[in-house]
Amino acid sequence: MLPQFVFLLRLLDSNLHSPERQLIELRIEHADLDAMIDRLSQALPLDELMIRRLKKRRLILRDEITRLERSLTPNEPA
Image 1 (cartoon, rainbow, N blue to C red):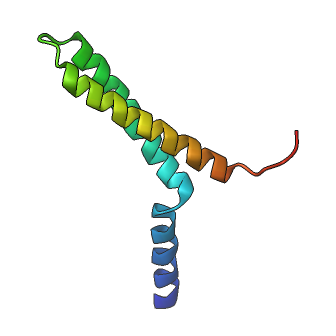
Image 2: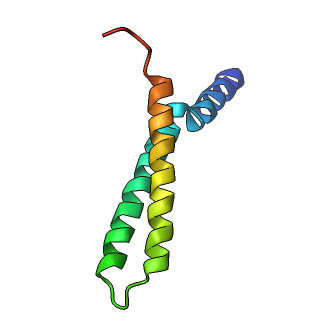
């Protein structure tokens, strides 16, 4: 019984660091940043520096998402 338990733990741990899991986490963070940018854009006084920083982080996330998507998609001719 113990070896099966260890196997399951290793399987779960490997799924935590899979590219698919990273992609999901990046998409969630990107959506969170979108919501935060929207809220800050409507707040007064407007914190333009913070909004600029959040937008920059959002672009970095978008690049990471694109890179991961390309690595997960096989290169097949259309």
